[in-house]
Length: 299
Image (cartoon, rainbow, N blue to C red):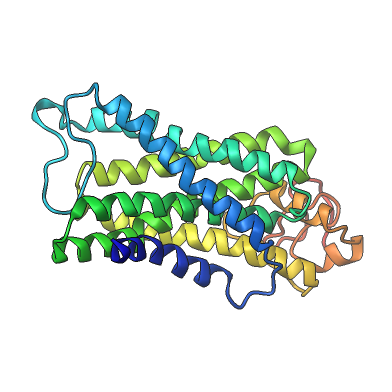
């Protein structure tokens, strides 16, 4: 049993170390991080309890392993049914539970005074959530060494990392909403909808068992999303230190840049030295001489 517990928590320990080590960022207090991690464990148990109760009324065995066991039986093995199950039940349930807790913590805790700390809370919540899921699958796999090995590889590099990305992105958007009242509703909606769609896509790919067709797409998506999250983590670190020049994070928007730079109280001259319009904070593209938003000349 101790070995299974170790297997379950090992991915969380590694990804926490990987994402937090060696960075010039303030790490939130251990007390707060432990609180969020244990709430992640609790929310995963709540989600699994609700899902189990709902699935008990449906004629199939839901929980999936890599041992070759059939997930669905009969005519229920249909993409449309799996699509509805993942996008309209599993993903919304799990991400909404995280959303309710993260929003309360990020908006309430005074220690969270930067966007990057919203990402930190989200990452730790996702690690707690994934740890409970890991333990369930490992216990269910039993003592079969090959099954445990393949399952550990899968949970380590895909499922645990997936929850880190979902929750990290959710924490990011919730922190943006906390610090910019003008865009608060926009960021709250975008954060929740984005993570539900990502979670739904990931689960749909796995539950259809179309590994030969989707695993490459999933891996590429993970690399892009990790780049998205790390860019935003590093971006705020750079602007706090005022290391110039700075380029915009991957897929960033004017509203995001507005929130970052306004909160940090950059002067007109400092913003002018960055890759943004000093008047409206829109992102300057290479070679542009005039801002497409407000018409200001960059010369």
